[in-house]
Length: 515
Image 1 (cartoon, helix red, strand yellow):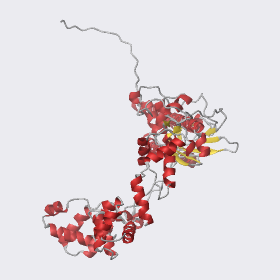
Image 2: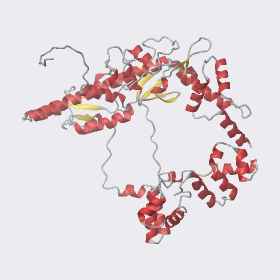
Image 3: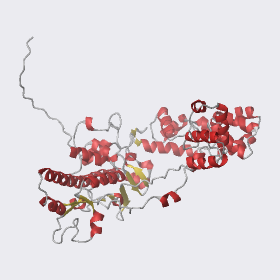
Image 4: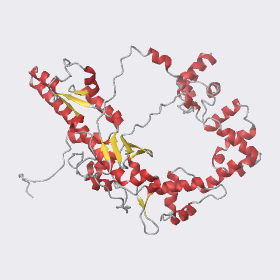
């Protein structure tokens, strides 16, 4: 077969993910807090970008970053791309691209398109959705050193133990061993590591390492440096002078206590039901993680990205939370001033590139706001009964429903739903909460939301009396009486997702509490 060369012309279509499109997709997935962090990085990289609050604080027309009087168009603000308006109209340009699923991180919400309950019809004026870009994070003043911070900061668990080690243990060898043991203690206060391997590494006897461990176990907080849960609880009970043989036997069989096997525990410990209940109550009052009293992680409150409230006329207002949204300005005047003094082609190309990037970022922020509002407003429309009457009225909804209603790609809706929270009169919810598969009705009526069924299962279990614990089969019977066609394995799956134990375990727990 002869080998030859030839030229062919082929016509094909392909999607090219430009850097601008990649940036727009990336911004769409970010929450408001992550967006602020991203904008901070862009402010450092791009000299033509400024915060709106920085511009307002400058205040002087002579400032290089301030527009001169009579030049209202000198500064391009993200807010200038759109004003507060009613529900976004068709003329808006949301971030959306009908690209191949290879670039989508979204799978199907369900195997097929589940049945959906018919909702009420809405007009364009049924609610009001507003958006605006608020100011970004303010700068903190520079501090001359962190001396004051070091004085006010709380000690870590390691520092607390090392201070006691320096006071309680005098021998240098034991101090060295003690420091090595403290290195093995995790944030909960437990020793994580093999002490025998530690003794071999230090070239000393295991007995000496264990003796130093016993001394550290007497440090504050009580229960620290334990090797397991039973030892941690034993140290605390010993400090309370409650570690008798029966209690030690109970600690040795914590697995039976977790299973609420009272008969076996009473036999092993040699106590009656009343004594066993008292012993279990004492254990419940102990601290299984003593180290957490020191290495506390500051809890970050969730900042909602979308605010929803009902207006006096009965419609719904949907707007972005402007308190944690960055507000950016593009300083066209500064760009023009620097360009006139720039002679090299490389510098001019750099300034042109920075100006293009700044304008694109401001425009992308507006597109992001418009897209999020479109999706959030449609969710509020379709789930209005939930906002009015609660979780029992949460209708089945998948991302395709929203995408078709607002004319966007399903993957775009999925990106909007990621990492976004909505503050509503009924509480704070992640946008993904409103998307739920459908469960068919037993009588052929409207289907039920999986989240509503899950909530109903929890409600039934919470109300069950101690003498009539509901099994999964009984839950199926009750739900079918209410018109929910559901299988037993589905009930078990929903119960486990709610971290509710089985009927056998619940019966043991409630009988133990009543004993």
